[in-house]
Image (cartoon, rainbow, N blue to C red; front, side, top):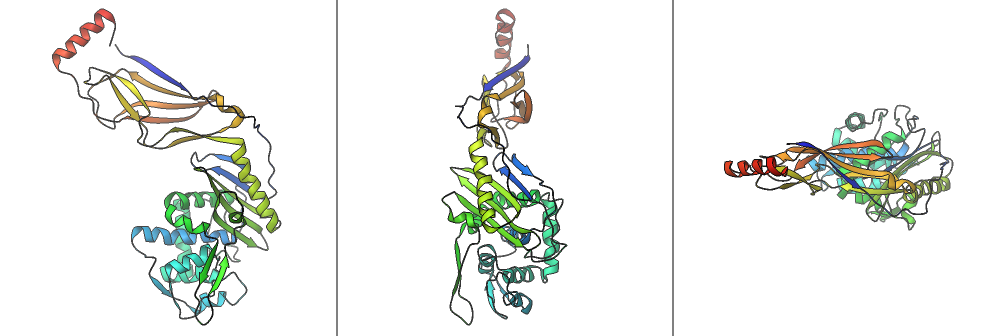
Amino acid sequence: MFRKLFLIIFVNFFISGSVYADLNVKARTAILQDFLSGEILYEKEPDMSIYPASMTKIMTAIIAFDLIKSGDLTLNEKFIISEKAWRLSTSGYSSMFIMVGDNVSVENLLRGIIVASGNDACVALAEGIAGTEEEFAILMTAKAREIGMENTNFANSSGINNPENYSTVRDILLMSDYLIRNHSEFYKIFSEKEFTWDRTGGDPITQGNRNPLLYKNFGADGIKTGYLAVEKYSLASSINRKGRRLIAVGSGFNTKNARSRESSKLLTYGLTNFDLVKIAKTKESFQKVNVWLGKNETVDVYTNQDIYKSIKKAKKKLLKVTIKYDGPIEAPIKKDDKVAILKVVYDNELVGEYDLLASKEVKRVNFVSRLLKSLNYLIWGDV
């Protein structure tokens, strides 16, 4: 009565004239991700150990954002500025220019960190949250482990010189991905081009965002620059173009201009050489499958996750989606029962397999109806 059913859905696309091109990013290490699919589009020595410099501040912000999200911290909460934090504003480092004894809100400290890249603001926030910067760094490293940053250790909140503050561009990518996925509202701060701090004992000071890509007509909306003499220039960057987001991380750029130029080239490469294909959206009906002995002859199925694939523009015709199930599926069916499997094949290789769930309950028909359906099947072979 039942048989294996395969529903094949060919994903047909217009094939553009763009061809795959080799790319050589002039950095010691780099990586590029298509955000929605999670797929890596380019990498160059992605697990090479680096000093993350001010890209460290992404994690400093994440710790605060997590606490705000959990209700353990508020943007209006104020922290008293210590001498340690103040001294960083007088020693030539990037600073927000806070003063000893100031009461500064978490919101202002975060903008001082994200926009002005203030090392003094990092220490002030770290001490306000954890008591000491050393304790805060332990929280940072623990969070890094939680989100899969296996080759990272944080020794301070700012990224200033410390050999125990190390990471990789792959780990910085994971951290940036976590930031955008989990704190989209707060992530908007990273796109702000300037921050004005009404400092104590002086006129307000306005500082611009150090991310050079924000000033290009490019769709960039983050994330964070870095510089250390030993590491040279680095940048975690992201663009959002018509709902498609790419994240790139590079380190070991020789100059500021190279950092801007090569990061732009890397992101442009992802846009022009790959298309993002939406296969399924969470909770949205994907397809109907046949039902046997049910009050409905079919039931809609859905996935419990978004499914996207990044496909080379010259190769999109090789993508194929199939639904596999033992069917028709006998009622009763409960809502959210697993009833089929979605398989994604690219160039004859299985690249993804996902559960398909019933979108609603399907009750079994009564005895008389079941009998009639069974007789109909025996006579006509029709379910």
